[in-house]
Picture 1 (cartoon, rainbow, N blue to C red):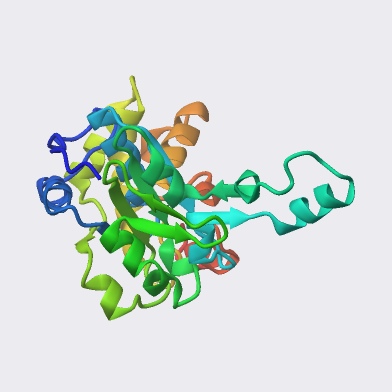
Picture 2 (picture 1 turned 180 degrees about the vertical axis):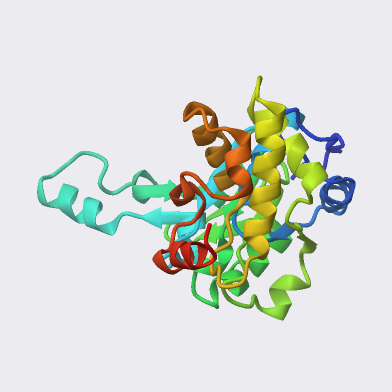
Length: 274
């Protein structure tokens, strides 16, 4: 396995990151440890992996985790059903088990000829044992395929970024092996920079008033699902398309359904007279 140095991550022109986050990414890469990123939805956890891959000129492999995902899925899958089907019809090569082995996303990252960025997205969606089931593979960067007797070792240690929405606590043994960073929700100044990345031309008065209204809404009592960065961007786009007068935002929230996605949140907004 190659342990070549990875160039430092200094950000990406499409991703606004704090200096603290930039430093943490580089520390994780230098120590060759997975970077575990937490933060509320919409804080750019998934986009971080894309930015790292783009900035370093590396391929991005994404392993999207679901409630039914098992650690084995990321290593390889042995298609027993297809082999049985082929054997019934006398298909040539059915005795070659390797023909029915398909590498998962972790296997793809290990066998890539060049270093890649591997995103394990929303790891907390899986069973609580899922992270522990990956300890050996992420530590040693290798795994075995018993069906063929093959040992898969990483040709180049991937840059591993793991995201979590904190839906459940992760095992201590897993946490000890990661570098951790919590992405705070952007303050207004940083949010202004984020908006500039997404829009070429915008009415400054509209943006300023939208930002003021947005942060007021996030602090409003009774709002269960606070709007995120992506929803703010969509809202500004809707306001711009709709030709909304910025002054209107001082007393109301046009297109509130772009920001709020729950009935009770919209009801709380209406109750507040907005």
